[in-house]
Length: 254
Image 1: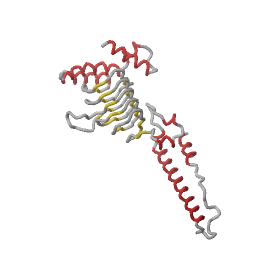
Image 2: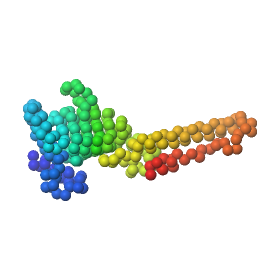
Image 3: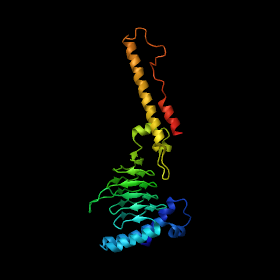
Image 4: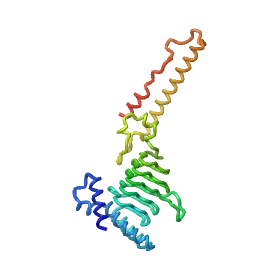
């Protein structure tokens, strides 16, 4: 028991630069308190002392603001940072080394008793503030879920998902568009620029304009080759492409 507690404290000290001492972590971190009380509640739940498990869970929620169902399975080394408003459902599984920020919901989308209704997080998954992971899906090892993202389908290992509904931002098309890869990455507290609706709309217009210019250039070239213009080709006809879509996309990212 004490070895597990020491391991939890070490994990918090290694991941939270605000943590100054072991005593501070032990006495002032509600995420740690919630995990300790959950182990007691889960111990009772596994022995079918359901009321006892729920009662301990309810006390934990009152003291910490973190609601963990006693049936949830949480591995060692999990860090719930800040923690207020975190909800973890009955059939959820949280893998070793995961980090969960405030306001996160590991919830269900089904009302069928006995079914796997809540997600399974692999090892070292990071779930940003306010994110919702809904349904009995798997989130692969080392995946990252951005703040306020809503995940309703499985995520592969190592993926970074942002937005509502969540999308994976490491896909090839996004990687080519986002020149500044470091700024496109995961932020636990903020929403990435890739998720900004205005930026997405402008990018769509840029891509559409670039596509139209390409089509017009091809059309003029085809007419010229077919001698179908009979000297009617305007002097300013754009027979080559000049639209710098990539440059404009970079400006949006600045």
